[in-house]
Length: 139
Image 1 (cartoon, rainbow, N blue to C red):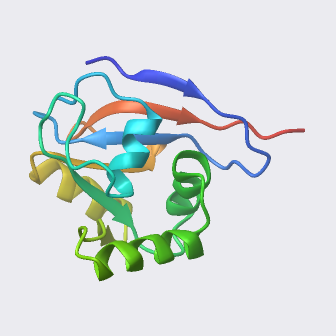
Image 2: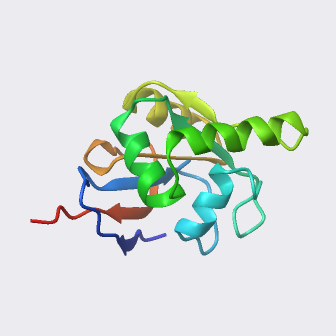
């Protein structure tokens, strides 16, 4: 599947983010809204019906900040409240959190159905890129 290019303009953008999946996984047609719903627990499967396992970066990660701003469209505090409510009513569990690019890459490369994000410059052949969220600094 070829990578789709999505353009977002953000005044505080730092780097392009790659949305990545296990190399043997298929998603069907996917966009940032689908990714957002997966990471917020509003969907449990990719558009093609295959189970999805979101992998998040830990709090404070620059990639996480970009992802929350550009894809989730919410600050960290709102995200924490969202998951506290969902967990309290038994509506799911928050995505796994990993502390480094290499940990995210390794986990996704070894876990069918997983989906995550990293700085696009850190992508290697162990994963499949399904979207690029491209950032532009305003001058």
